[in-house]
Image 1 (cartoon, rainbow, N blue to C red):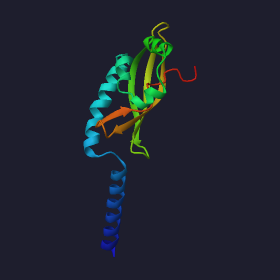
Image 2 (image 1 turned 45 degrees about the vertical axis):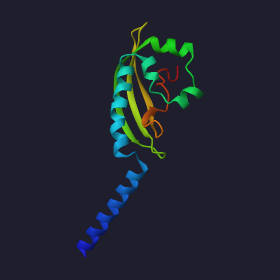
Image 3 (image 1 turned 180 degrees about the vertical axis):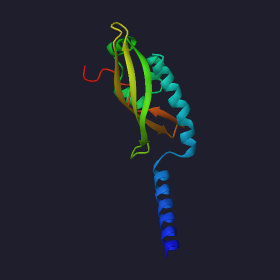
Image 4 (image 1 turned 60 degrees about the horizontal axis):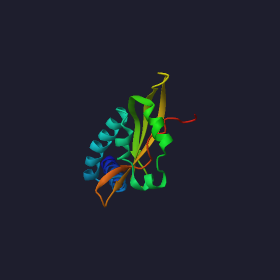
Amino acid sequence: MYRHLLKTVAVALLLVANVAQAEGPSRAQRSKLVPIQDAYVAAVRWGDFDKAEGFIDPQYLQQHPLSDLQRERYRQIQVSSYRERSAGVGADGSIERRVEMGVINRNTQAERLVMVNERWRWDADNKRWWQAAGLPDLWQGQ
């Protein structure tokens, strides 16, 4: 009886793992995600938001183009820290990350922490990942 129960539990776990894997990105897709995220994080950490914009989903940018005022606001801050707090697979297979960022205002030298949500979408046509939530909103509630 114990052996039968153990076998049933093992089969159930395998089924759950297969369903989760089917909904999420493939191993090949995941292997391309880490270098893209690392390059995006490096651009943001160094304050190169023009370069970071190159990682944003073109569909998102078409619907939400950056204004000159927004670009100027990004030039007035420096990112002092960037820490992933959680990550998971979205219902549509995208990768969702919650990130804590330290942000310093270059004019006042005041630092604050901001929580940002990222959503990474796999583009099957171009075989690459796009950050589909836009550049981080570093002025939440201001």
